[in-house]
Image (cartoon, rainbow over all chains, first blue to last red):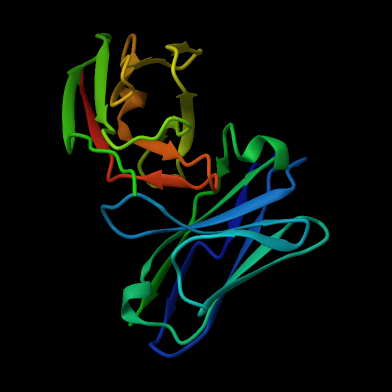
Length: 115
Length: 110
């Protein structure tokens, strides 16, 4: 079992550009959540996808959008990048019923640097 | 919004027990308490969770105060591999979101 995988590992973008990050959930998992983790801080919840729909959303602007595919993999898109978007972006997967009560499995993250 | 407060860092000796405290004085009656840890250059890893009663699993124990305003994660015998940032998190029952704090960096001395 490969666990949760994310790509790319690192990414450098310029202000104003757009970026797409990808996540493949752990085998058997159907729910994907995205988090932003600034340096030295805890992760901040962006949104969660289940059955190809956004089910929950944190306090992030509409520049942050996502998608879930029929195979449960997911993408996080960020438009009009700002310097403050520089962070580690984490993807976590879980089973729908368990997502709310038990453990989420996290990927290693994508380090985004905006210059 | 309910939040958690943890010490920035703690040190412990290898093979000794570690008690990691967490304050959550504004916790509501249906908020679950979760603990995750994040090893260097890795994503967070689930450790344990609870609601009111103390909980044990293969990784750790969770002791929850009777008034639920604080909790303690107990690692019974720390190893060098336990060096990580430990996050005490509240899971809101209203929207199921995890509210993360800044965490405690645990340093294990050989």
